[in-house]
Image (cartoon, rainbow, N blue to C red; front, side, top):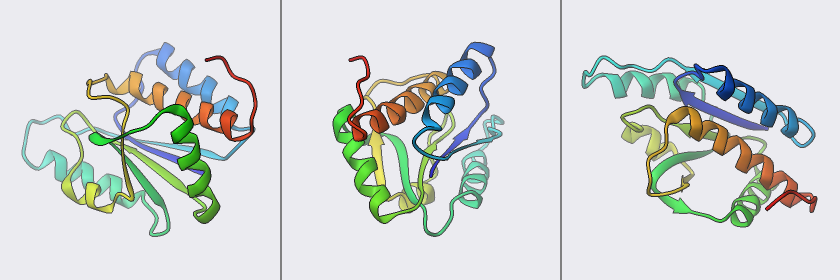
Length: 150
């Protein structure tokens, strides 16, 4: 199973439609769970702590956790597919965590089994969730040796 924990909700219909489309496509390959958590935008130092608590409540002790971090390792689509394939051979669940606008709390990063970066660039959270879903879907297409546009 693939679980995506994300801070913030998809607000515009076009982001929700894109996420739904990739979720439907992925249903051929795996069970998918997307957990949207409210962001804390009060500009207080406790915001990151509150987001951490929400995230950690949704991570099972047996989950293989991949945090999305700007300082994580960058992989090609083929390398990501290998990572997913190898991980699912020994772990029932892969949990991807997308933090809020202030990033991830240190304790969430410590819980991470793998730190992944898509780029040194910063992306809007709503766009990034769609990018992540597309890359996970692409990974399953690669794993199954099925064609998909390049």
